[in-house]
Amino acid sequence: MKAQALDSKRKEAREYQTRSSGVFFKVKKVLYEKKSAFQKIEIIENDFYGRVLFLDGLVQTTEKDEFFYHEMLVHPALACHSRPEKVMIIGGGDGGALREVLKHPVKKAWLVEIDQEVIRACEKYFPWLDKALSDPRAELAIADGFEFIQRTTEKFDVIIVDSSDPVGPSAILHAKDFYQKLKKVLKPDGIIVAQAGSQLLHLEEHAQKAKFLKKMFRFARFYFGPVPTYPVGTWCYTFLSDRIDPLKIKKLRIPAGLNYYNAEIHQACFATPAFFEQAIK
Ligand code: AG3
Image (tube, rainbow, N blue to C red; front, side, top):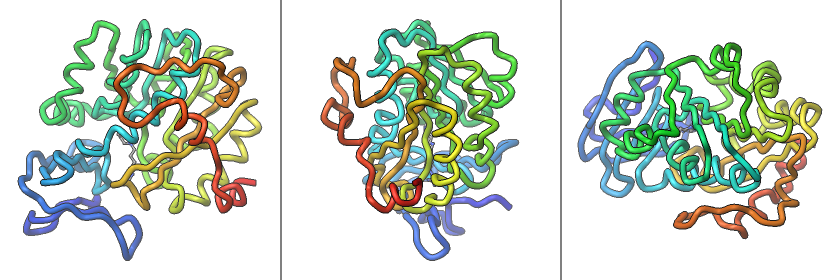
């Protein structure tokens, strides 16, 4: 059976991040619980974090701290690109990434989510999704991201991969083959950003990934940011481009009113901790 977050009494919901540690939330209310064709979807209400979405027992989004993740997934790339007209998001059915993308002058943004039930649940419990999807620039495709990129005839300025962890069912979205296919639908001056996993827990996966990404892209950099409810607290992202070096941008285009990302964070987030540098060398 797939992992679930709620305990048998439905009083607590938790994610085991390792076999012997994790994060837990006291449940004020269970708002949604369903097994879709793809995964177990749970949404609970917690006093501090507000609504919390779990997929197969893994924390995806909390109302209180989602801005750390979504701003850092989206803005470093969008702020660097001079004309980000066509943007594709793979995964991200909760809509947080789409909401952030639409803060930029994009012409069209595709949200490619495999699980219709995630969209349904999030439309109800995370109202920013509904709002983002009603933007005329947004287009929802319920599809497997891997298949979508193989049949699309579009070329994208920015591609954002908002998948789950680099282990288990999502491992395929972190593999070489996937990145090769992504590159085929990216414009020559385009940028791919992807969530890469936990800084500490997925070190082995980062090392593997660094090997092929450095060969595949002229600029392949990891960057980092906090996400309090994700495993071990510091999260990793990759920035990939053949033309754009994120550390050499003269003028970043940063939307007003963000909560975490700004020009100083942009410079700082590419600094690599010693243990991480050692692992990906
Ligand atoms: N996508 C990344 C979630 C990874 C969290 N991992 C974990 N809790 N073990 C989240 C979707 C948000 N748009």
